[in-house]
Length: 352
Image (tube, rainbow, N blue to C red; front, side, top):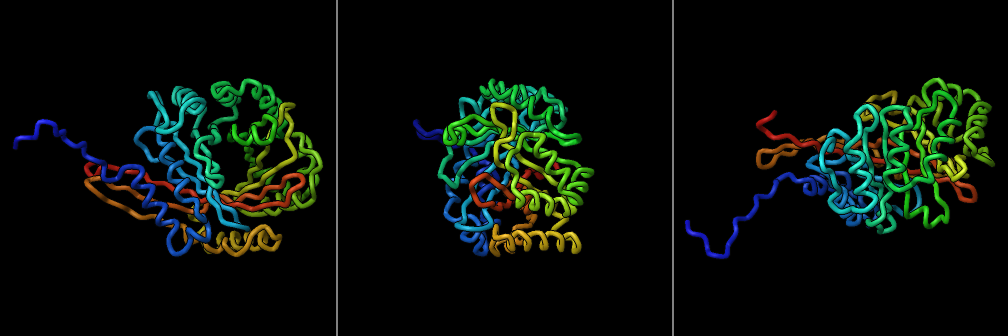
């Protein structure tokens, strides 16, 4: 066949590229009226945020963050795993500057130290230009978080972070550190976010007594601890699901007057009868406190795993409700949010 002089062979499109997989995954999560009830009108912003967050060939882990009361909205978190970019000239498809520095640093680290790098978007504010950037770690060695803060230009945050971690009660474990450039500017002060896994022993202790919990919250600098926050954290501690506490750390290395508590679920928790009873009981308690309406009843319907095959490639698209989080901020009413985790790993049919 003779080609026309100016014609060019068209590049063959991947039948299951990441954007296509995202669109299928989102449609499955949002079907049966869940888009309007859970996400509102923010789907297009989340899609653009996803497109800007691609790094390498692998599909990132996604967290769809949604409120459990008030007007529905959607924020998107895209997490790149270390093994997907290790030792490469990694870059994000649509984010430069500090984000390029972050992933370049991340790809050069050790698998013993780092686990994932996240871009977290305020797509509910229609912002896809200024995501937060967060490091999730594999150990309690502070070298990686310190190096991360330096890589993203937060040199002034390294000592506050160190001070905060050294003040934490044993065996709290700081599992991630994050910076929020847009929110820092809005708040008029610099802060870093630290997420802490409290561990089974202390979770059991908090469930049985408020005294130790109050002492530990005070130890990390939280002032004016309200009784509602203490009782909310203890309600979470009494569940069979792992408890995490989240703080915004100021320049003095002490927690600012906001604290969040979350528990993490696994897919099996939604399918096991007894554990599902614990979940439903917890959400009914949250609703009774006025922090949720009945939209939480839709969360179980977002649990799925479906196989898709096109053009010699296959993917297993899956989603499940992974977290519920409560937040108490001084001067504001408490709020509740849920996080849906979506994944879409691909394989070539010949490799199966």
